[in-house]
Length: 364
Image (tube, rainbow, N blue to C red; front, side, top):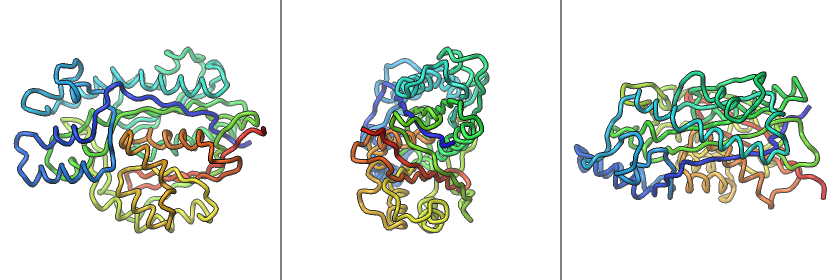
């Protein structure tokens, strides 16, 4: 039984901030010397991002309500508990909005959902977002629930893999996969290069997918295969830990280099003949990661255009980002029935997650 993504839905916080405004805000921090200010300018300007969304309206309007992250002197450093409280307050609505959109586009009713898989690495609470989706969307009380936490940017692919396994075991299953990440809650005012790079790319957003047995009357993305691979290095170059003043992201300059060195062999191993790939969904951890993948795989300059466009418009929304790209590919009328899609995402470890998908269009 082939499992298929029948629909994808997305949701974004209402506050949108330009990259240039965020750059200037970060560069103006008290205590930042000229070197730090130059690093902020270089990192933000090189990110290939125009705008990002955030659940922190104060970043756009100092007088706005919500978590206090600014004052007249610049950015503040709220404690981890306050940041997590804001996650608990704002994440559920984004989960629900993305999930509702995915259900509406699937041709299925909410009461048909049998399983819920939620994904997030930017906050935690219990009962968690999986519970709230069942309650808030009026799903059956018998829905099976799973939560994948702290897997990072790569987590959408393991979530889809779990959904595919569920459908393979039970062809009648209808699985709701929902990812929401509020990365802006954990921006740091540190002048450390890792924190500056993280602040220059990460953003907030949510996305969801309905996975079920392939429906010949609906367009979809058939989930043909998955693979995971741990690189030989990078364990300390991409990491995500809980600190006293938010979750602390380590993202060194070695990450794009490691991916560039190893991605060709990994991709050939898990995806097969790359010449047979018609479209690419590569997680845009940052512009330099996309550049390294494009070069290492000898891809045409347009191959990663969907990934670059999501990065440009929204930044890196961690696990939700890949689902935004798949949404755009499913809606792309230039792609036809039978086109093969390769998905790649990168997470702490350094871990590479891969998926093979086939686009299915209903007969005219």
